[in-house]
Image 1 (cartoon, rainbow, N blue to C red):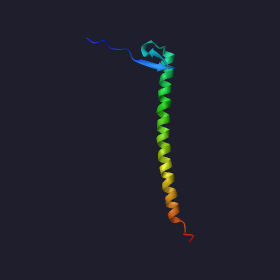
Image 2: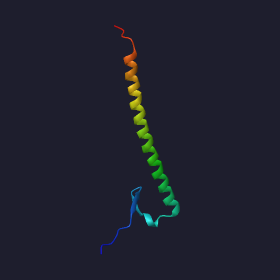
Image 3: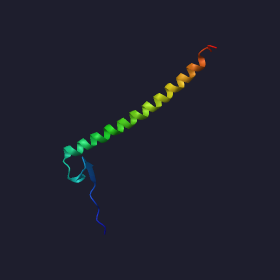
Image 4: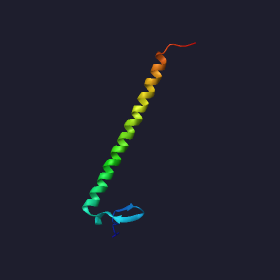
Amino acid sequence: MAKEQAAMIKINDKEYKLDELSDGAKGQLQGIQVAEAEMKRLNMQLALTKTARNAYIQALQGELPDND
């Protein structure tokens, strides 16, 4: 049978076995994952908001009188 390799994580160019980390360190990693997921969600929300803003700008330009 093939040996299963322990899950590893690299922090500051040093590798650590996940199952050897303290509960506190595992909690901090979980916090990082939650923060990164929230950042991704917020970046997607920002992209959607920018798209809406651009649509409003185009609509406004269509409503303005021509100054010819």
